[in-house]
Image (cartoon, rainbow, N blue to C red; front, side, top):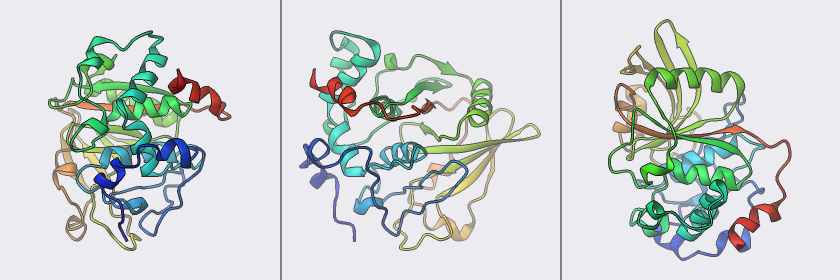
Length: 287
């Protein structure tokens, strides 16, 4: 039974600080399956964790999927939204990363924090800050440029990759690491959890949160591959006509291409062998 929506979540502003330690894995309901043993990623679509996040929670789900690949960590949606939805918390983390004494002007004037947005959306920038806070070295970047209508300021992105550069990064990343990459075109967020080369084509393995609630998702609806040609256009995907009915937004997979289309992205580069002391993380926000 789905019992929480965005309005009830907004009322739980202290939930993360008082009730859930981020090392604790959330117990999945029957809609969340432990799959993909090669990277140990837990697939978390809409409606997981008893949360009704249809239409606004895809980036939060992508962040959960990134974290789930590390030590089987899957923090509850409620903790992520309540704790990392605050602009005050997010600004403090950003300043800690960049060793700044004050919030830069481009963040002061930006409306990017999920608690301040009517839709409650997160983006890869939020994922990047969460990964840092949780003790992971990560990378925040653009592909082909800055997507229109994004909330995060352009200034927080330090690198822009072409499609060819992105292909090289994918090849290196998945040969060295088993951690998903969050991508976001400012409308749809999802993860790439593996990458293969087929001649001149690229095959992306996608974890897509944009599906309706399924009581028992044995067919792993929401997991598919997309084949791109040498310039980044999508030439095929593995979603069947029978599976299409479960997707809330068909553009989430039909417009998944990289020929000039602009994307935001983040991913884990390095995992700590042991958790950083929790008190060290706490100091970031207590300052």
